[in-house]
Length: 194
Image 1: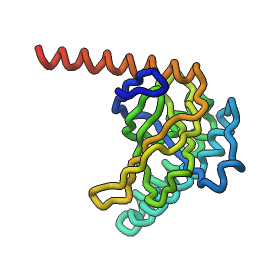
Image 2: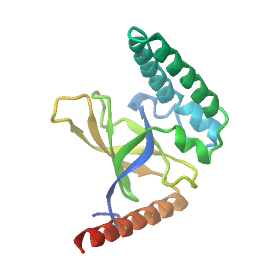
Image 3: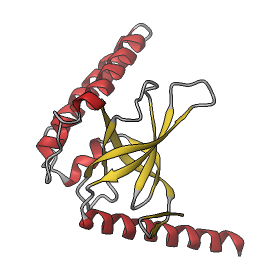
Image 4: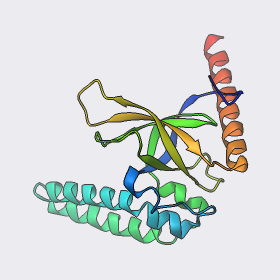
């Protein structure tokens, strides 16, 4: 738990659909976020992440193709089917297209692992995450509070972020989500201790 502006927020580690985009300091003014982004905007904005995943998948399929042409063809067909399905989803279902990752989340901010070592503390991070299957994804710009370099020599860097201009409705959703997760964890601890 930490204090921010007189309010206390509990932090919790949880696996969520979560994607990010780093906005370099010199591009922040040129890339404002809309107040109510729709599914098409979110998909286009984060298409860069989806394209990176597509490139990785393509590279893997090429490597697999050297061992098994049939398996490579099957994976290519599956990827085409997934791309078609992604084009037909609505905003609430968009979370299924967002990669899942472990995050340390609170109503005031989040800590996430990113795969980019050259981050400037004055950069901003646009964060897209979905709390539950029934909720629309939350898109929020964040300021970087702290950067933790990986100790294991990998390219992963943990970045602590603070939400900027998070709507009160989204903050309430976050508080409710975190409280429910805490209750869930307390119940599990009770079951294991008895």
